[in-house]
Length: 479
Image 1 (cartoon, rainbow, N blue to C red):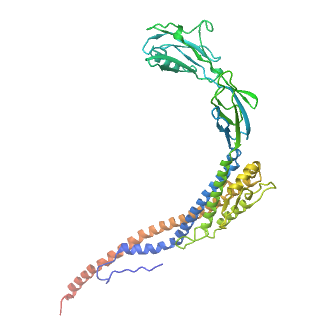
Image 2 (cartoon, rainbow, N blue to C red; image 1 turned 120 degrees about the vertical axis):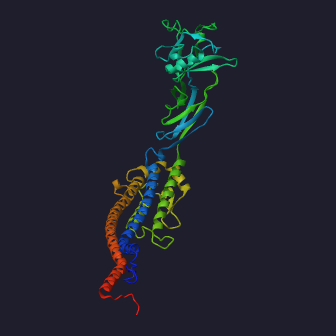
Image 3 (tube, rainbow, N blue to C red; image 1 turned 180 degrees about the horizontal axis):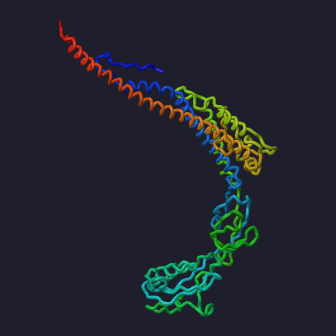
């Protein structure tokens, strides 16, 4: 601890001393006890930052691996192609699809049922209502003016749509300004067939729509079904498959495709299309490359912690047992072999040590592509079988990372650091409280001492005056 001097000149000068400066010097000396605690706290916080960064990189690596080990992940992804995209296009192939080739013969396309009225003037007053049913549903009637809508063709459109009766109504306007009401079934295919009520099929309540302004020559303003609802029909690998929609999801497991055209007339031969479902090796190669890249990033971060910073100071984890444990776990896990298959290690996928000899890896994409094309199932097994690379290295990463539930090395070290930091912060806080109290007391004591020093000249003057009064001798006289 350094020394503190009081500078107040002659004791009888009345100058006193600078209390604030003196107290600050004393407090600074007292605070020196905190310096090793603060240095240790700074070192722990730097170590925490480095550990957390490594933990984040290990988490990224775990996510990369999970995409490859997940049964419904990247390994399960499929691609599809069509030999005739004018007839059929592939929309998607999900994880449940199985690689293979299928023959699809499109016999007819699906068709949505529609109905329409005759054209009327847009402002003509209408009366009555329409009665219809969709598929095998109940008969439904919507009257002109329902739900406070206008008694015009557009008002009837609004009333139908507000009624939510299984069709969508639209007003189609002609070039001459007249308009007709169009109904489109809300249900695809045969199940959505629109049937207009008349005296034959619904004698108790046929449609009664009429134009009160300009009477139409056709009953019910000519309201009639225009297109019948049809299901798409196709042969898939020789078996008949139907679909209510031209977006087909039920023909090939896990595959969605769109029908675009069918036979051109009754005499034409239905088009035959080859649909090929394949493993999405491109996505798998990309996922493995990402895994290798992120592994290398982690190894390079570990290597950096084994050196010194630009100022020549050791990195926060320099010489750390935790760092060595992480490094050893990663290197050991990536170099292991599993089983007797041709694809039994990362080396067989073209993943080998880089020429830099720093623990990083390189990926030979040609070797990986050949493995995927010739031994796809074995590649999947390497990542997804119990006890193989995928499950083993997942456990390794969990054991090294920042997951407290898995007893991760980083998580445990961060917990230990946190405990030490709490103790150090408490020590610093308690010391600062003690110093603050001492500073207050010391300031008061020195202020009193300073006041005494400053009052000495006045007290001496009073003594001199008393002495002169008693003795008749004036010390201030010359001679």
